[in-house]
Length: 488
Image (spheres, one colour):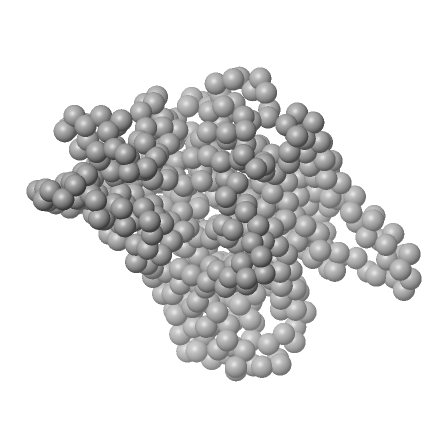
């Protein structure tokens, strides 16, 4: 590992990293649940809160197949501190701070103190990571326990590693896949393989005891779940069954293309450009050190094994699902950048290019007909204000919600989003109501997009940044007055 020098001005980026996260966290304290967090956070927590934890298994209508520890965690805090949005966001704060803390500890294992602060900043600036840290999302603790697990693995701290793996199992099935990736890495790094297969197997089995508590948790919950419900993971009548539809060989090839797109999306292509610049310059010397070879191993294990439970299905390749891939590759690239012999000018240019690429990655907004991972970029932040303005307009015009259609994630009861005891909700769009609320955040399929644009006219338009939200009315050929209001 790299020895550390005394604190110097290059540690200022550490403070900047904490400051960026703190500012974003503070500015979003009153934001409601968004995207999948409505399901995985609010609805799960509401069930436990209203039933006083009388049954750990969720109703099928909201059962995502995961161990629902995240929802139970929120519900427990509601019981203690009150059912408020700010309580939910503060519940994320230990993990948000912990991510920066653990990432800082991790980079210092491979990069000298002179540059480790810059490496931390380059990792933290990832748009998907920053976006998730503004949400009440189970992926925030997942990333924290992933980083804690990596640090524990390198330090050979078995108890902390075992706890990290157990909590990864409690976050989601993806957390289990991340834990499996850590196990594979741990096997290579911390096990000295004897000559015979028998001794090697014995060494792996002995090391596996660290992972036994997590396995017991999984087996116990899954067995109980199966005995009670007759299924594990998902079932054919699940609300998300379409997402889990199996794809053939062509579908897998298509998904691999989507995987590649996700990896370079939102400015991350800049990180890959930096990597290839370094590869062209240093060629075979790029991985001559033990540190870079270890980090390459971690990245390859994660990028190969983590998506295995995603590429076989129709729609399981969300940007946030790949956070360990982004982080592990950024750590690898940053280690190469700061340990190879580079002139200060070239290194400075590459650092600046990396920062600009990720920062402007939040400005990547595709045409309306191209789906975008809005929960994985800071570009989604104006949505909460636009949604509030749209609701206020409907109330001013005395338009009841029963007359209004909308789309995911705007069709959940308002209470599930804002925790304000307002049970009103919009109708899921089926072209059967007078009004429709449409936003470019909603990722409509072509059929619904053409229906909205062809049969409805805008009566109120709200815009902030790259986002807009329209209240439209069914016209049946009539020309209606277009009233435009721009959000300040």
